[in-house]
Image 1: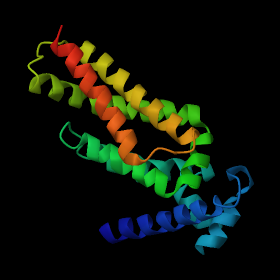
Image 2: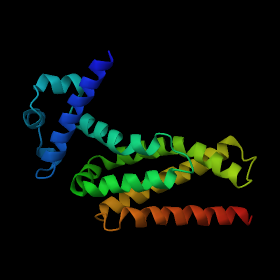
Image 3: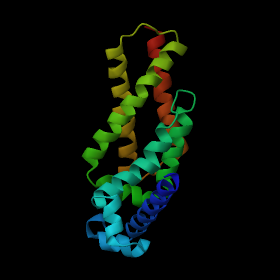
Length: 189
């Protein structure tokens, strides 16, 4: 069973690599499943075994390349390194991510923000504990996590839409500065 899973992952990766290559020279709207299958040297039926359509493949790619590395084991101590890695991944394939994030970006923003909010709930609690700000109720923790989840998602989307001009280090530094400012405000209340 594990071997089948590894084989399925390799096949999905081949299709994802083909889509990424095709998006370097073509708009997503002009790319067909046949184009992806041909470039990845698979049958169209194999594509449909793994994905319903091109959009599902694109969603899978974004999830695997950006969200899994960001959210896997995310905590306050590694948050900035993980954010910097995400920015670096996007900058490395700048043209692909710039184009990919234009496609159905409203749904993607909503999805990424929801997942980020879920993860930031734990980070918010951890920050509170580390800074002696205990006793905030669960609903307030969620609102704070939503604020940062949507905020960071907005910053990432805006950076991508502006052409990713700033370096991953600069963008991570700006988020770090925002968190530091928020901590200072909380500590002075």
